[in-house]
Amino acid sequence: MSDFQVAGLASGFDWKSLVDQLIEIERVPQRRLEEEKRENDSKSSALGTVETKLGNLGNALSDLQEESLFNAKTTDLSAEDINISASASTSTAVGNYEITVTQLATASKRTGSTDAGGTMGAVTDTLSTLRLATDISGGDFTINGQSISVETTDTLQDVFDAISTATSGVVTAAYDAVGDKVTLTSSSGQLELGADEDTSNFLDALRLKQLEVVDAGSGSVSVTSARELGVVDLSSSIADSGITGSFTGSDTFYINGVQIDFDADNESMQTLMNTVNASDAGVTMSYDSAADQFRIVNNETGAYEMNVTDSSNGLLAAIGLDGSATVGNDLTFSIDGGSSVTSRTNVITSDDHGIEGLTITANETGTQKITISRDSTELKTKIDDFIAKYNDIQDYILEKTKIETNDDEVEAGELADNREITALDSDLRSLAFTAIDGMSGDIFRLEHLGIDFISGTSKLEIKDSDALNEALASNLDVLEEFFMEGDTSFAARMEEFIEDFTDDDGILDIQQENLSERNKRIDAQIEEMERRVEFQRSALEAGFIAMETAQSNIQNQQSALASLQF
Image (cartoon, rainbow, N blue to C red; front, side):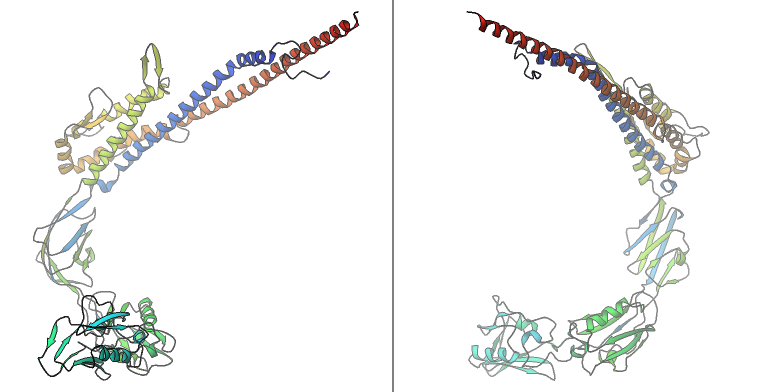
């Protein structure tokens, strides 16, 4: 007969529940080991946090050993400043300096002729193809109270005709290709251009817009474009850009001895300017559409010549850049009333004035006093950071090592039984409080800086801010010795102590490794116990199954005997 898998089928006894209860009792030692493992994990995690916080404190101490903290300088400008800026390095001598700027440095430049773009086009051209400083937008505009609608696909003549139609022939428009200007003429003696509700910029783009009424009373009155209209089309090829002259094929010109090649048929003026600006010529070429004018400016200020050699087709001459350059100026200045000195740029360094580490940027002529003094702002920030990091680790040690009693139950922190950690509180306090060997005078202990322990704790605070401020203002040399002079300085001795805990294979690493090894052994114990428990379960189940089988056999025999009786 097969094993009985349903407990009590023959006996009526739920032996499976009994087995489960017995096995749970057998697993009590395993649960104790698992709890010990969880405690070890908590301890290891807490030790990791101690290591992190000690590392943060060590970093704060390292920061206090930066030499620049004790030699930083600040620059103050007199109230009657002339718009200069100044900065000083740690090597700059403390003192007062007076700078007089008599001339600013400027860049050499070439300014092309205005109206370089020739005419804007012809009356038969569509509005979208006219070469104007501002593209014409479709919409409506108003003349003498009459609305005229335009599309960018209209020709200029289409718009002129629409103006005449809308005003019943009173206002006519004409384009002078020689003067490159548009004129509107009213035969009624009245000409009112534009309205607030206009949606097209037609009048603006042709430099005609004029909201006030022009009224001559009788006869005719006219308004003409304020200046020539045509500009260079930077996106079209150089040959088709509108520049007056014949430019075809490839050619070359030179700026500051650098060769600039271009293809007038296939490259645009914008491409040419990009080529110039990316070259080693050291200049920036630009175009002002409002003035219809090209410019070339040296990237560096100073009295440098700007030499150009035109192309064979005279492109630079056509835009007025082949003439004489305006040579830039060198900066001229003096320090403390001394002899006049020049600089190629408006940024003056020690190479120019001889004051080590002092950099002055001039933006205006005149006289300015500069005061260089020692700056302890960053040092104060680092001291505050040290105090914060010191208190942070002390708070954490207190939390993880405290032992409390609540309702007769003792509650202990994860590290309450760790002698190294419980002693760390007092060790850090002792190091922070002990005098610095070899120092004399008024400052050789942390409390001389106005920093002391919060009453009843191992945490620090600034108790006397006046004492600290006085030390920062007047005793930076002493503070440098206090914090970073040799192996016995305040920062060095505390840092060395911390490294014993935080280094690889240090106290904390060893403790965490021991906990990890202990948990590995616990895992092995639990695994072995579980094998035994499962073996015991199998034995118990086998015994009860045998009992059920025997009970079933007896019941079957009894039933057979009962059936033989008469």
